[in-house]
Length: 120
Image (cartoon, rainbow, N blue to C red; front, side):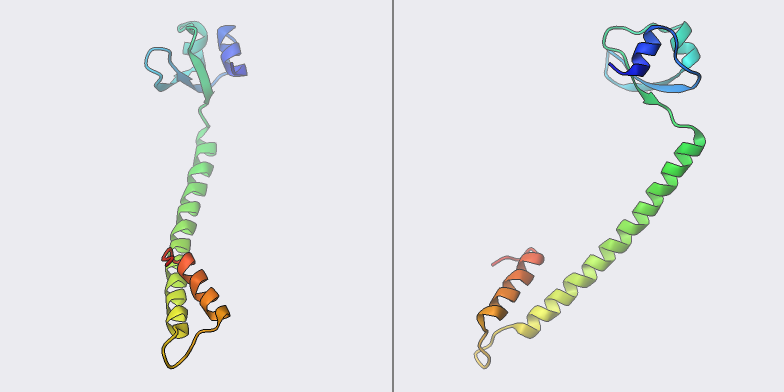
């Protein structure tokens, strides 16, 4: 049981909003500490999941999330470019009847295929 749930059971939750998981349907709802301390007593499996963040905390998290999404999009583009370069390199290294591959070249081609998810 969390420290916040213990405080709730004693009617001592600090001011704020809290995420509460209920015993009937296991869904999570937000309630004020005033409501929880004075009007809604916890049942056995009710628990406070965590305190709802302030707007400032939420805004910081939201901005960090958007930055990560931007970085992820850039990484996705970079991965596509790198895969194209690997395919080009593999094409330049392909063994033909005019040019025999060394074992080292075959190993590099195998590693390129593995990196591209095209193991043969």
